[in-house]
Length: 114
Length: 112
Image 1: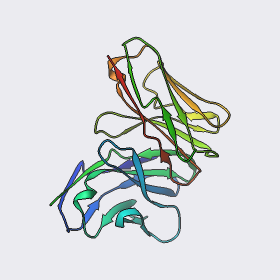
Image 2: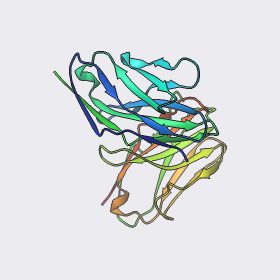
Image 3: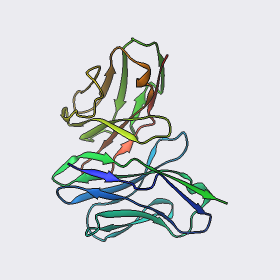
């Protein structure tokens, strides 16, 4: 069985400070990993993915994430947060042994204060 | 089309009525997913399709829920005898495996 955990329901940071949103996963094989963002009253937008290759992946809006196989983590980071980054963030995983099934974490609400 | 299209965008129905929600995926995408999201909450997995087959229906909340996909394209999620707890936003997504999934804007279902 595959699963994703986002241990923090909420993350609050000041504008200009680093932002980290945590994600850990569990799969039986090797993972494909994704981050999505949902702004208020909007659909889910894809941010970035890890499929293979370099463990550090860069995505939209200045976000990046690092795949850490030993810690089974894929934390989302942004060096300097903006108020406009306030949104709901979801981590998702596919297992390479069953690469159709896509499982999401519960989501983390990020609030960036001015 | 350019993206995943869902219809209707909003649906208000009376308790006990049946509803059909439609999803038009991106052309050529083999995988199709249905999720449900209550206000400001996470994504509840309902079902996914590989082509026209649904290997995992474990997320369907009850036997009032069913889904089908025809021609490897359009999918319909049907809810029979709707209940107030069915009120939510129903999201559809499609993808080429193993790439990222693209989401539609959702159908907001309100059962009154």
